[in-house]
Length: 38
Image 1 (cartoon, rainbow, N blue to C red):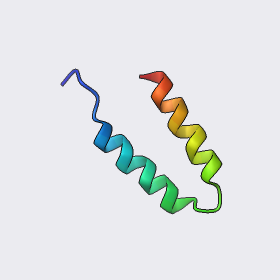
Image 2: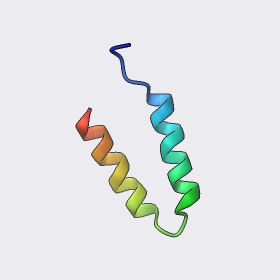
Image 3: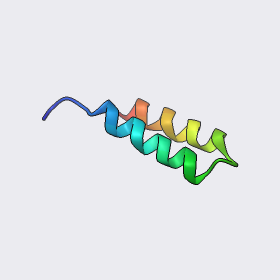
Image 4: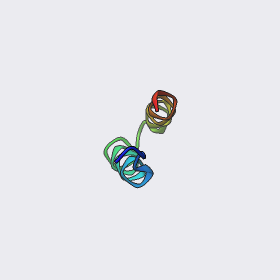
């Protein structure tokens, strides 16, 4: 279980997009932050 789960991350981002369709830039910022942390 050392490898990250990109599918879960994609699903999480997709949910964020659905929850915040009015602010896609915020989701992109969050996605980039998550990608940089790993």
